[in-house]
Image 1 (cartoon, rainbow, N blue to C red):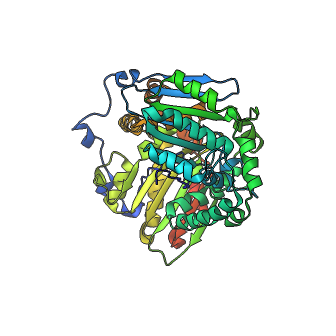
Image 2: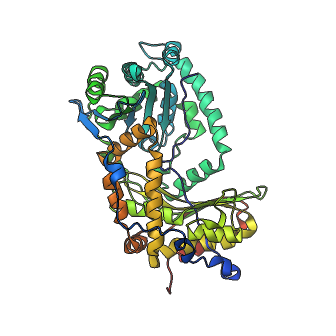
Image 3: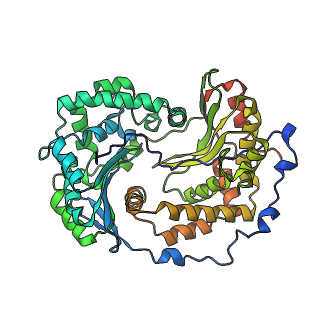
Length: 494
């Protein structure tokens, strides 16, 4: 089947990195990992800042149509394929408690037939051109996109326009899809990391829309109606809240012409997602949720602080700090030789199965913290290590560690932009969140502007004496209590 619908919860964030320290009883020479060990091989500090590699990237062109729809593209005429999609400023955050799950339900239903195409015709058209039609839903965005050969770009745009403007939502299809989503919910329940981050959002943003899950409760899935789907589309799928983004074998003028021709039935309501967020802002609550299950062999837990919004001036610094904390997995090749001091301590002392720092951004808030998986008998020392390394960012930041993190971050950003789908996704997401595509040269310059003093200042803002949110599952009896974590968001001496 060429059509693939991904209903899984997309984390805007592209996940966490973990690092850990150790309690005084376990501190040994293995914990003291001198920076000189890395300097002997190659200094992470560049002698000059060279952005030549990114200055030559193709220009991202943006055109706004009269109805408010934005069309953006990055052309690579040497490519044989193109990815085109519609990124929409709408997700589970914009649902009510009674309709939570509608955005994801709609993602499933959008491929079930239109006024022009039956479900079979839609599948056959995509299959016959060898294309891929896909979708995903997150808390703040919904995306529908297609990857096709260069010659089939007009058909891809026509299909996207058709499913977004003319979907039928037959009652029998809705009934059938309920069971599909309920089965999907059962599968997600078996993915502990997904469940953990749902619980983390639920406790960190309780009584706020961001605290709701993407899939919604089972009771809502059983009660969502055709009217709910149509209302969600008419309210949120409006031209000013949409971006048509494309990358690869595409001419911008041709894409604009196709969009003008195909997307004529969209609502032009001026209500923006930012206005809706202002009405129901994200409220961070220091709190915790623990689900004790002694039958489990491992404990999963996450500790988070309120992070930065997409457009916050310190969001880039938090990205660098996330990279400084890093990630570690006992099955990874790096072992104790990771650049992150937290990862070195965890590896040397066998404190965890895996650990990763995370930095998730939203329109007006974020989550910054560490997610870990460990055996119950190491969780106390692991917790100490996590909080020690997290709080250390407030007081100590070695220039070499910051430089190494900057280089790693820039490398990961470049590696992420590999392929037309990744580039199109980057264009669509950035225009929705920033209002423009940030050039890589500018982004790299902002990353290079983060130094040790910036890290300490941002640490003082987001970490020092701030409330935390904790979510834990498994044998949680040895996990320190909330006040223990809260007390370790600052040092009385340093």
